[in-house]
Length: 502
Image 1 (tube, rainbow, N blue to C red):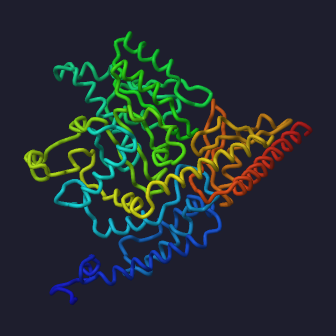
Image 2 (image 1 turned 90 degrees about the vertical axis):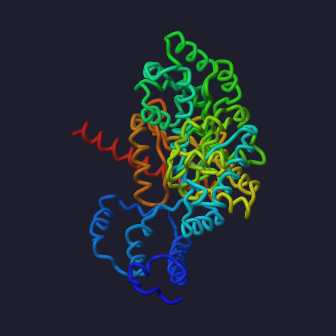
């Protein structure tokens, strides 16, 4: 097809019928480069520091384009691909980042080229129906019932924010006037466990709640919320004239992978008339597990649920959703704009996802999960998640039997929290030694692990979300940690001894 009259070089960069062949070639070049990188990676990270990489990025003059995709990709390799952190590598063991399945990558390629926007039907057509079908499918997996609904979001933090916004608005319905609402807001409380996600506190701040609105409930030895303590806190809040607007239970805490006793917590919330939100951003993989679905028993009683497909369904970021038991509660985020989604469209039964979402313009992220399910099916996804859970159990056994390490509670999911334990005169250096070992490991690029604190002490953390990770990989990383930490302790104790002698 010939270029239209008046075409310019800039217009030649637009994807259309006349540029489709070049689009295919350019994208194929980019995909080929990434594929070669993925195939050739021998460690998860290069160890590059901000001080080393930042000058390279800062030195690029964005006002002087290269004018050629090949040159731009060459440059991108220098400032991004070469030093990327590769989550598919079996010795990436740090955060809740998963390797991604190929059907989802196909979905990513399709959705970015078509560029549908999921706010209104007239911008998305079939994309809206696909997202709605996936929301229904997820709600069915949870067991929320026939009145359930939901919407895709950018991630667990946004899903938690929207769920708590709905809970706040439901609580505020008891206020008969604006003045009464203003008086009620400072008294609203949100209860979650001490191991819950920090997005609960962030959401409370964004929702205009009091600085002390979030009350944390103690956990047991398995880092699960203690139901009796929850019941006592609800009673205490009410005695003090406060209103518990929501309880946030966690199905898969970030640090420990612990799952709160959902059914017992749901019973307490039902008896006290409190909104129950379950943050299953991590544990949602159990929804498709052939063997472990029972670990989520009680989630079906929730008023709202967060799921992160980009954690436990092996999807690319972003892919998350918030689900609600009663679709009517989504009215709290509905606003009708005459130019976009006028109220008459509701009567005309035109499906506009913006009526349910905090966002307006929104990507068709649901397509990635759709193609994954159509190619692989839920059982294969569940098998992958079961594999990483089993691998974590094996890692926990390996570490618990190694006298060089101390391990925290065994997770029902795929995290292991542990630390190196120096002996003799270096015992007091445990915190510093573990921090040093993590940094030294990252600097070498041989492996990437996470860190956290437990009861004020520094620990390391494996988060296993890669079925390709073996116990041999785990054992190798443990040996590296012991070597780095042991070297640090030896050097420190030797230096201290020399100072005392001197």
